[in-house]
Image 1 (cartoon, rainbow, N blue to C red):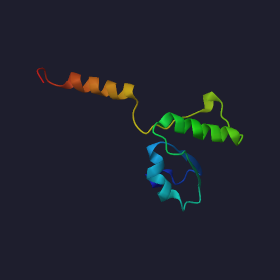
Image 2 (image 1 turned 90 degrees about the vertical axis):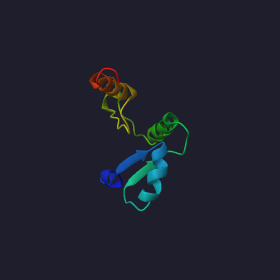
Image 3 (image 1 turned 180 degrees about the vertical axis):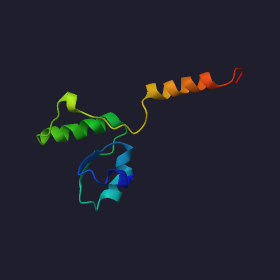
Length: 91
């Protein structure tokens, strides 16, 4: 995973990923930001966004892009429903 993001100059980590990558990236020349450890992801994201705002870095809503760690609940449910339809009757 570290190789996947190594070429990104400035990247922010939040949630459980902080624990996983902080030590691995400590010697990197890139500028990474780590939200403090919090039990829920949304507050971590808010902290990262607020830090960027305080530094004068803001983005208009139409220019935001999200990178998801996992599929959304709707996508997971849709796959599950498709798998159910493909199963033979009686299972």
